[in-house]
Length: 150
Image 1 (cartoon, rainbow, N blue to C red):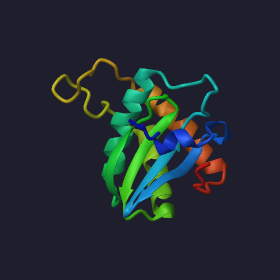
Image 2 (spheres, rainbow, N blue to C red; image 1 turned 60 degrees about the vertical axis):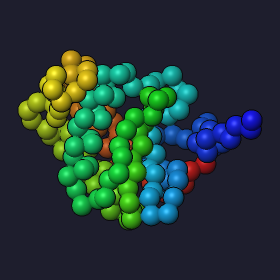
Image 3 (cartoon, rainbow, N blue to C red; image 1 turned 180 degrees about the vertical axis):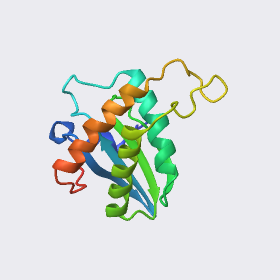
Image 4 (cartoon, rainbow, N blue to C red; image 1 turned 180 degrees about the horizontal axis):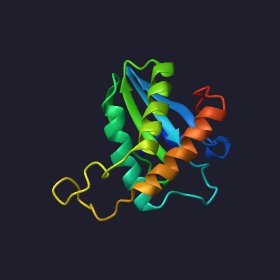
């Protein structure tokens, strides 16, 4: 049996830095690679940071006008995937930045931080998500975004 590799394994991850990339377009669905860490730099997100950021960002980004189909972490702990239907790249970038700003200024509990709402609710830390949002917003604000996937 021939096994076909995932398309994401066919790109040179040494060429990536932190940023926002388009990794796939399937019909009207665009997959954005939200790279919050440089691959293979040995600086990855810990599970608490990744988990909390997912709770916070997924809530804020789904409360925009974007048609968000999916948001979730990369197994390599260097970023997240955001799938959007009928994406306007500039609007997506703007909403990502806005959602990051909302995480940074968030007051109150982490979204979904109860035993009823989450399968690992004790593994959440708002300060870690805020720090990650600050890091990534800085990247998106100071570096040009060309969306090119290598």
